[in-house]
Length: 451
Ligand SMILES: *Cc1c(COP(=O)(O)O)cnc(C)c1O
Image 1 (cartoon, helix red, strand yellow):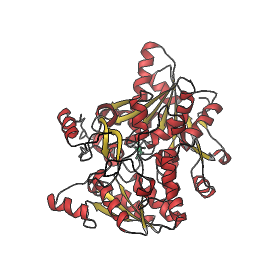
Image 2 (cartoon, helix red, strand yellow):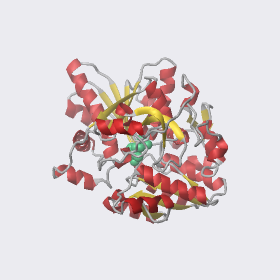
Image 3 (cartoon, rainbow, N blue to C red):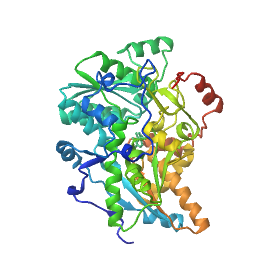
Image 4 (cartoon, protein in one colour):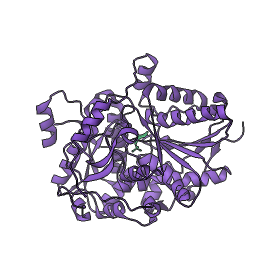
């Protein structure tokens, strides 16, 4: 087999993040405060440092990456780009398939690309503590690591169902010095209220966000950090796509289609946006966000103003949403269970500049296993969504004889998800399509916003 791996030297770690806002045909819709008026940057300063707020609202195309952040990126960046020769052969497809592996980071996923940056800016602003939430544990462990690197205390509200399902993610956060509480917890008003209503509440990402935001807003030494969705988070993740472009140049190739799993949209935006810059300049490249049929935010959600959390403590943003009180079914791609989506991804999708597909759970595990058997790497269940969609395309091309170049963002490894693989092998996993009535009902509960 020919060379399958495209490596860059450390000097090729990007020096700047790419801000897609500069190339969007329309300015992003503003987030709204509780009074229904566009939010002022100051309103966010209780929970975010000014440097990140500036990035959140910036329209500058390039934003410099601080040296200290680039130094820490060297722990795992540049990440490798592989040509999936063996997967191609197993599919018998005329397509070329490439994947970039973000699972080589210490926490095992792309999320450290932003946690390191967020910890840096918070420490620089004199903040001592970070309160955050985590669903499956990927973000919590990334933030725990970053906090440790910059001397910040980290408190993590972990969705209760995952807290019990994934004890080793918890141990990982503790190893890096973070405190972890099952959410809903007794630590916050929001948590206590939820437990009063239902002592068995298994938690949701929306609820855990409310707990972390409540804590950050009530303490001057504490800020909040979010692992996806926000503009500055997607900005930090663009190191993925920027490196990938250089690696495709090394491979003397260019993708026709890019597939990335989509939860809040950060790894999708990070991988796809640098290619969007080419698309905006006239190049033909299709950018495909892949989500679960059980949490079909882009493919079946409402494009509307909604809150980012259950208790409505966050601003309202114009996004695709299943409703801020969405209670996710217990699927195993924990990182893809958020009710909303990045405002930038949502707007570009609404303008038909991005695409989205939803994949059922069993198909994603079948794809993940097929990938592991061909390429060796065991993907995170989230990443397997992108693999499943790329395999579907490769098999379609087999019928039509088209030889496309497909690029998968392999956002993380699945070493902490073997319980989910176990359930798959023992036939316990099921497909779940989110019911249409629930989607309709959520519409009723969206905030009424008149613009
Ligand atoms: C969190 C996570 C995702 C999804 O989150 P995005 O915000 O959409 O990037 C995908 N893959 C892995 C491995 C994750 O940890």
